[in-house]
Image (cartoon, rainbow, N blue to C red):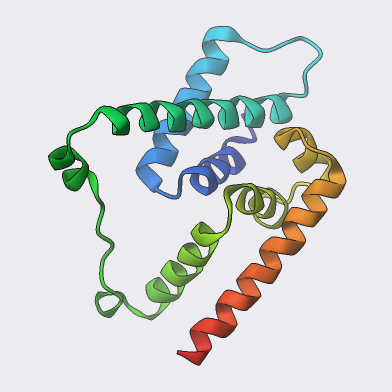
Length: 157
């Protein structure tokens, strides 16, 4: 499938973690192989939509598990990010960019990643996320504004 690289990036933009992105990609490919897709569906759009829906299901399942987990288990699951001092120049910058992206609301991050990183048109992104084109344009504009504001705040520190 020629869309696998773009789908992997989409998975990473949804999850924010490489391991989760790989799991989501595998689940998406498995689902597509098991269930197939409608004859009249556009392959790339359909796969992205299936991927997004699998991730939404996973988030819901995680919320249920978290509600029923004990306090000790919740403490064990908290991830700690490595300190900025241990990262070298390029890795530190990449981490800062990733952090800024992850601070964006999910709907803005997804729209921005589909258009800016994966090179999808606004119309393709709108089809994948099942929203109007104007909504995609608005989300991208707000995402860019948040990223610029985030950059200014970081420079002031």
